[in-house]
Image (cartoon, rainbow, N blue to C red; front, side, top):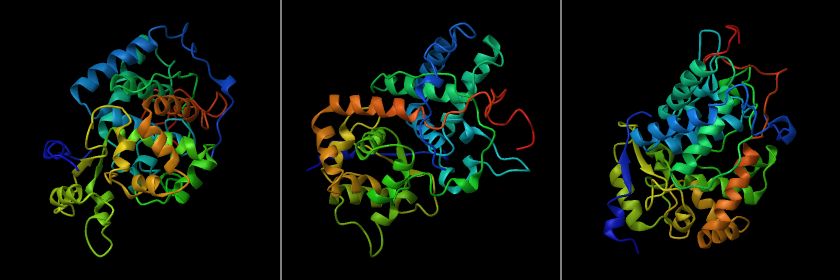
Length: 329
């Protein structure tokens, strides 16, 4: 049974915030910038540390943006590209409209600093990959190796987003079809879903579990009542949001999995991981053993960072992360 103290820290209100298998590991190296940009790691680390202190939701937001980037056309920073008069870019598809601005801001800050230190050397894709890892460790998550040398892609198309990004009401089968075509196992899917131990979701993403004839009776009743109160005006105030992990929302830990077993999974897709006979054993494992979760999450993140990476022939180092070096797209 939830205590009123826990319930009091559940929620926040925030203002608007193709299948490609992993590339060969030999295409990237951990010391890629050792000679060409020796301060790369320090600049990234210092910048994300400052930003996370200023805006504590940055870590969760950057992890989400990294995932959305890699699962569509690979880890090539295509999600960072802005729409122009010739092209509607990925970030402006309706499924990406809620991607938090803090994640885009941190990449811009790092890119600006790197262009002063080593102009034209570091790709936006590598900035996003490295900053995601550093931010995860800042909020208590596991360290994992980030290999470098990605190039930024030449394409960003909004119409390609649907069918390539999991959504809030997906079943395990729906989610697994997307993960599988990117080379991930069922266990790796559950481990990566553990990234929901930090971050938030807007009410529109889970309101169907609260209101109307299809309200979900499997939500903890007190939790559901607080969510209903929070989201009662969500069609008017679309910025209303709740933490994905209502117990330790700012800490990267295994509480997300413990919550699933208590009826505290916020999204239908979260709750599905506990209900499904195929994924429940992994939920149980990670709920009982944070070390196992951290180890599997770290391995899965290393693998995620290798999905569909671009090389010199099919990518570039953008001068600015939000548009291609060439105007035509």
